[in-house]
Amino acid sequence: MAEDPQQNAAQADGLMVVGRLVAAQGLRGELRVLPLSDFPERFTRVGQRWLRRPGGPARSLELLGGRPLPGKGLFAVRLEGVDSREAAEALVGEELLVRSDDRPRLAPGEFHLLDLVGLEVRLLESGAAVGTVTNLLHAGNDLLEVAIGERRVLIPFVQPIVPEVHLQQGWIGITPPPGLLEL
Image (cartoon, rainbow, N blue to C red):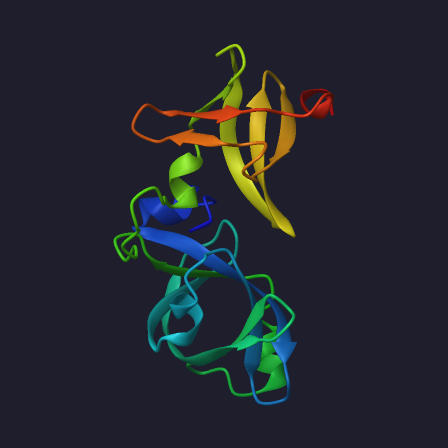
């Protein structure tokens, strides 16, 4: 995994979503963030970030600090101007964004999840195209949302089911278990 692909309006602003504010943490304005990125520094390194209600405009603020919450898969962050539980609760549901050009370097063979959106999905056995990646959902395992005609199918983004990603060629190869594409 790398970054969340839910970028439409945010990318037009030169921003990309890296997390979602899911709850207040404590009484002093900290917030729990569901990371939509594999880069923990997005939530721990002090610096400029943006917040946005889905579909709304992004606004700039400073991330003052953050830390992982052990065993929860979440981060607790402190944001500029948020110093009470009530102020934190008012931000729940907002997206946390960074500049699109602030993409960490990747090792060979790694990729940003953002880059998967729009790729064609092919069956590796036959080479037949079955659909297009439209989104990525985080639910325990990452799930690729694939448009197959009018339907949307969720495909677990795990090595046995999605063993090949060909970014340069514009497609991913899948080996789905029986019945997965019919769900």
